Length: 53
Image (cartoon, rainbow, N blue to C red):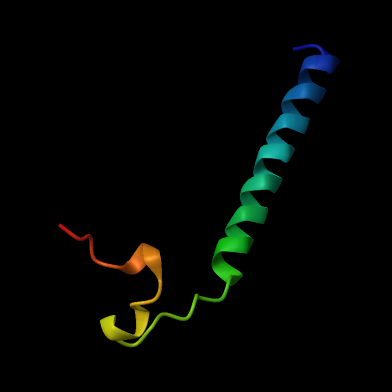
């Protein structure tokens, strides 16, 4: 393997590993979103309403 191929391979591996580590860190350290305690508390949120027939 020549030098340029080794440099490209190692830089790509470091880039992918760094991106994976960054996103794992973001996922594991993001605080959970507060959820309503009951179904009645979220009637005003459109995406949580029951579909109407």
